[in-house]
Image (cartoon, rainbow, N blue to C red; front, side, top):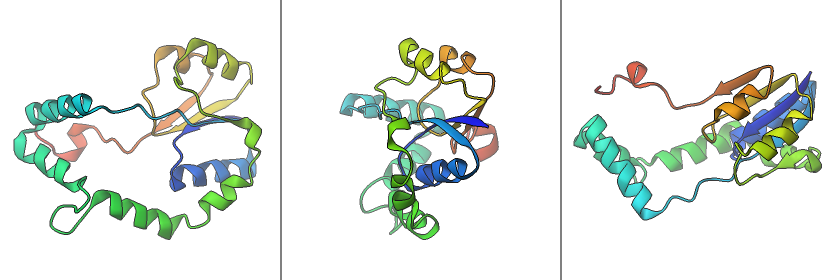
Length: 160
């Protein structure tokens, strides 16, 4: 099966790429560049979260992202530790993949870039996290599998 993978560059993303490459023909691996998040963008996001989820929940979420964490616990530290534990060889294994098929576009939804990917003729596009995938990208392929850790509010019990 011919596969395009669209994902980030953290150890669990690299592990996915290596795992799929063992059994499938990898047409391309796409790592969209992260959006530059300015201070004003972060403030607007925090205000939206306060309005949507109430101030206490938004403040707790923000505190878990701080370097010292919240009550001795830091989300980023916990994630890094889990990745070291479960994906210790991800980076080295990933470096063994064919590097010419790896792309880092500024905009994964750019029509020219999407056309280039479509010409590769994948049977499926596998997405793990990353950017918001717009209609031109989604409709360019026969099958697209998209997985994310961003759970809908109805499943998390967060206030509506």
